[in-house]
Amino acid sequence: MHGRRLVTWSVISAGALATMGGCVVDGWGPQFKFERTVELQQVLAPGTTLAVETASGSIDATGGPTDRAQVVATITARAGSEEAAQELAEKVEIHFQEAAGKVVLKAEKPALVSPQSLSISYRMDVPRATNLECHSASGSIAVRDLDGKVNAHTASGSVEAVRIKGSVRLASSSGSAHAEQVEGGDVRLDSASGSVRLANASGLGSCALHTASGSAAAREVKAGSIKLSSASGPVTLTDAQAQSIDLHSSSGGVKAEALHCSRLKAESVSGGVSVAWVPTAPPNVVAELGSGSGSINAALPQGFAGQVDLSTASGAIHIDQPVTVQGTLGRRRVTGTIGEGSGRLSAHTASGSIHVH
Image 1 (tube, rainbow, N blue to C red):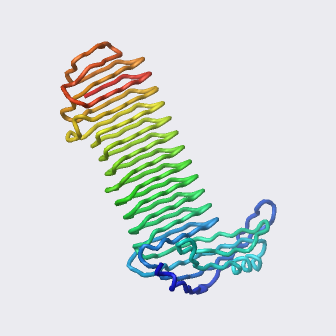
Image 2: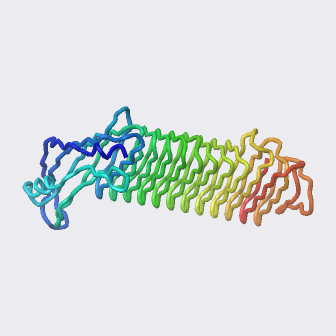
């Protein structure tokens, strides 16, 4: 890569601050904190991948009109005395190096003994045309204003990306994952415990949001495919355009409105399902709607034509459009056709009513 001949880096010590926390930690007595900042610069060629990792600390990166990464690292050391905390902080060495086709920001740290601790947080300004990989074991991550791929993961904390032109992959083991104003590429947001949210995204290939515990929500999204799921929380989608849309909640309602798609699957194991297409959506839409415990409401595209198969184990069925019955017409089961077309609507609930209009 062009950056190979530009691997020199500069380190500027920028003062230090020592403070006494005045607290007892695990019976080890008072803790003292020493904070040190280090500034680094590295020229990056357009399209370079910059990788940044910290075991404890936040990462904040902003793209802009520059040809180099400008990094301010804040090193915070805690120890049993002021002198020990300062010595610990000053043993940390931070530098750039090239590895596996990337530029990596590395921190060389001394071994710790209880009750010592170290955290390193990074604030970075980078060229706009940079691919960024960020990882923190404990701390939040924020990335903005990049024309490149973003891959960011934190084990504990929130992660967000704003104004990105390129693929975005965000993950948090304990915290939210949010992205906004994304253009092009693929988007994947994951959280083991926290909300996932996407807004104002266009030109996407695939879009996938999943959380094990929390809400999954997206609005103003244009993609080839869209998938939202939550193991424990509601799922909402508003103003979305895609060939196929897949929505699922194991415990929570599913709500989607202003849809423009050819295929839709919306399911809730425990909660209601409500979907509505824009009037200009394809009239031959294929939709599968299901709820284990909840009502189903479907506002079909204008001019929908095709087969319908509706059933409820406990509830009523209401259809606001003329249906030609082909086999079954009852309070809890309806099969037939609306108009003449290749569309298909199936809706089934174990407990709740069904309303089609």
